[in-house]
Image (cartoon, rainbow, N blue to C red; front, side, top):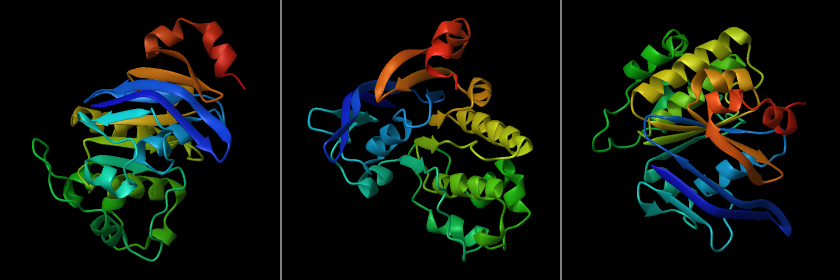
Length: 234
């Protein structure tokens, strides 16, 4: 579904990403692990086009090269992005926020509707007319994901979906991601919470100082305590 090869990115003259390569498959969850400032968010922003990849980087999605395209073109191709900052429309209701994200259905995928989304995020179904600014942080996070799904993406990028959320909401978020995987979506998430990642992910990529340091399955990572200690411990 998504193949990133030799991804390099810069902020001004600062070289942030160094030859990052990864793959994400339909019906699987890939987690980008690493400490704060490791380059996880920059990797996601490069994939969606908010950070322009350096020349020679390759980002193919559904067999089409995306490197160098504008974010709206990448989104229209079926790649959804949920930023860490959430960025909901605080003056719009839940239903109005969902309407903003709507895109046409895609071949081979059942289109997302508010009713289907409320089955995954029941909290939202109970507050359809509530303005986004009067929702908790966890509810806003759910709304941001639901709004992105209204675009009917084939792959969704989730940047730190569990950060700052109460434990009960984190568990609900894990259940929601599992349901998205069951729908056949490819999910790529960046995360610092290893427990949360182990709950939802099939494979992991550890990023440190903008470079990939380890790749493999979550069970394999559990068997490498020295890797966790070196790259993930605080």
